[in-house]
Image (cartoon, rainbow, N blue to C red; front, side):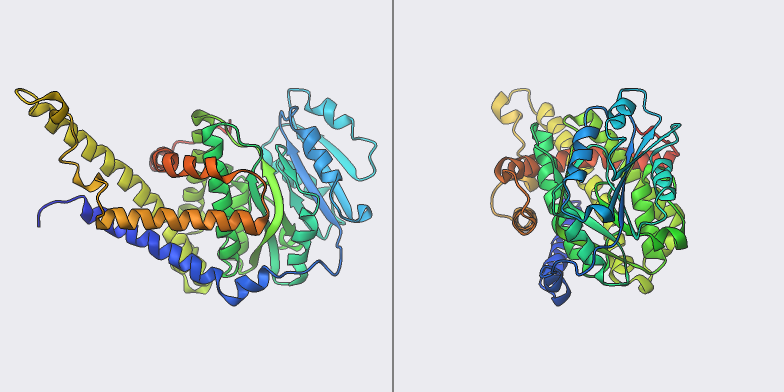
Length: 413
């Protein structure tokens, strides 16, 4: 059989459509429908929200004020601001809140985010629920009540929020806005089959029992939130999602910091899964998470790298071919990509499959925005996502795999 790029492209596109079909079927299932009808909480347990801070002078004040604006009984809510050895004005800004009855301030030497979170946990023995909020994030006033209602079920040990981008400005931030909305939708869907494998820093809430039974946060290859979620799943507990608990986070505006952030996330995922939690993969004990969701997450990384590499290879091959026939041939013809047939726009199978995959993804993004009531203009973000994501994401995937394979450990910032 003659070589054709289609031999690689078809399986990856078919797998992507199958995954999206799985999401759609799960979205229509009874557990997912019931979660969208969740009512207000019947009880209000004591909640401690921990905010780890390291050089957050530009955002920590607004973050703290958003927590103080939560519509939750003040006697049942405490806020722990942990200064993790900041070298800017963070300590002075935190001091402004020192006399507030709901706020506790901890100043400690720099030890990393997970140590700051653990200091907050140790200072809150009375809390029934313990939450985390990154110091560059803001919460909607009803977010905590929405999340607390998820803990009516005793088997739920953690709940994630509906995280979106705060006021996107650059094209990359708009791309991330659409990506985060898609994440809102997928976490909502996956929670109905207990398939969530990361509890993000922006306003994930845990039952305090988790820390007593499973231990506090760990370094987790600089992804302590992902490691904790995997540990909860490994222990056989359930992680929920609150579709309407809105939290807004600041995201990298340019390519360099975005790649640094995503390489940390992706390499942390790979190291946690391949080194510490291999027992989750292909394990029927963990149902959809072990048999499908985690294997597909690994497969999607491989497919993203493969398709990107194949694209570069085909473009290079076509360019070499054009140059080789350039003599005696009109320049406009010589430089055409006539040999790059699988990227042509005519209605082919690949064009159909790729277009269907993108359209279904955009459908989920629109649904996620509507169901979560997330503010913002989706038009620019959807266009930016459609154009940029396929070119940008492979960059952090390739570097992450290379780092894990070579043992490279990069700094947090």
